[in-house]
Image (tube, rainbow, N blue to C red):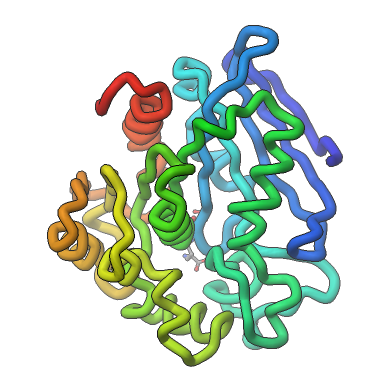
Length: 283
Ligand SMILES: N[C@@H](CCC(=O)N[C@@H](CS)C(=O)NCC(=O)O)C(=O)O
C-alpha cells in the first residue's frame, strides 16, 4: 500500500492511499480518516460509498465528517466508485451513469466488464482486509453508509451482511435499481438480462426476498432532481413497512442531491452509527 498524502485534521490523520487491487486488476485509491486515539486502541469503522461520477475525493473534500469522527472516535473509509486505468472499459458513449465512476457495487458478469468491474468483492472483502491490516480498525465494529449509487451499495451490502455492519444508513439512495432508468442500465450492462440476478443488488427486492435489518436511517432532499425518476424512497418505505423494518426516512425541505445536503446531515448519521457501534443504545 502506497501513501499518497496525509494531513493532520481535528487531532487525527486524513490519509489518501493507493494499492494494486487483485480483485479489480487495477490500482485503486481510497481515503481513510483516523481520529485521535490512545496507542494500541482499535476503533470502529464507518464505510462511506459514493455516488455516480465520484472518486474517494468528493466526500473527503466536501463531506465534513472529520470533526464528528474525531469526537466520536470513528475511522471513516471512502473507496473509489469503479476501477480505473488503462484497459478498463467505459460506457460506450462516455455517459456518466455507467462504466468509470459508476461501478454500482456489483461484480459484473458481462463482457467486457467482468474482468475489472468487481466492486462488490472489492468493497466487502479486499479493502476491509487491507484496512484491517494497516489501520487501528476493529473488524467487529463496522457500519456502512452511502450516497445515491453509494446509498444503493450501502443498503444492499448492509442487507446482505447484517451481522457484519452494525448500522446502515443512506443519503438519497437508489432504493430499487430494478425499477428505475439508472438501475436498468447498470444492472443490465453489468449483470445481463436475467432479472433474477438483479434482485441481490436491489434493496427493495432483497427485503421482499426476506433480508432484514434492525433499523435503517435515510435522509432525502425534497428538492433533489433525481427524487422521482431514480431514487423513489417511497418504494423503500413500503418494503420496510411490509417487512417490519424500522425505517427513519426524512424528506428534507429545499435540499438537493449535492454535498451541501450530505454535509448538513452527516453529523446526524455519524451519531446514529456511533450509538450502534458503541452499543450504547439507539440514538
Ligand atoms: N449532475 C451530475 C449527476 C451525477 C451526480 O449528481 N452525482 C452525485 C452522486 S449521484 C455526486 O455526488 N456528484 C459529485 C459531487 O457532487 O461532488 C452529472 O451529470 O455529472
